[in-house]
Image (spheres, helix red, strand yellow):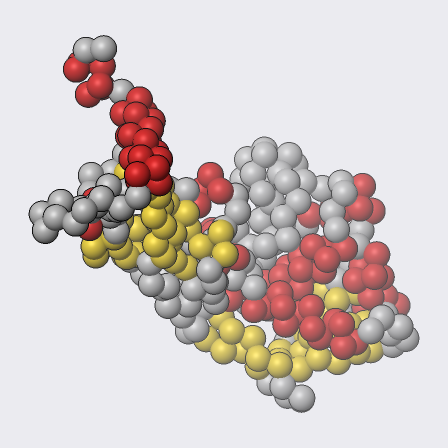
Length: 306
Ligand SMILES: [Zn+2]
């Protein structure tokens, strides 16, 4: 075999190295320990200079925030490496999908907000494989820090049979979600009474009592009143259900849409076929080629950013 092939084919060299060490181990077992010499390591022992270790510089660089990009520095190692792979971790657990989490650069997603990220770096040299985890980042932040706080109360009107505690809980989850209006730096804090906004769960027949503009068929917003129609809360809409949308997502949609009106937004259309529908599109009435989407788009977030 020519030297040319040995230099070119790292995999071949790796397998050959493995075999040599195995032979040395077998020899050591058969003949017992060799006499010690000050300069020679005993057969079968590992020369400290040939132990693969991370020798520093393994860390995550960048700001842990939605919309930013983090990078991993793979640092220095005690020996030349045959391969090196990375895997991004969330609170110490591998992030799925692995494809995105296997790259040196990583853009935090909404799922990462509030959690700490780190990277498992796995280095291979010959038969040795060593993994080290970097230090964790700070908790990943929302797209924007809080720049405006809206205090709101929750009330019901008419014959409400839906569970109001569930309504309160899901509404607050919608407001706290990194994909929602919170991305614009707007925080919603529920108060027992008062505040600047009232979130209603109302029986369908009560809707026209809020305003002549409100229909018993849909939800509505009138002044400080963000009114969710109980029929829609309990059953979504026929077009939403026909498209296979979940009730949970419809509930996010209706809270985001009517609250979007409170924040000053009007209705918008489909930007182009195949795009996620703006949350301010009247998605229950037709999509114009857009896809159902319960969360504000980046353009809508930008519109209400203080
Ligand atoms: Zn509307």
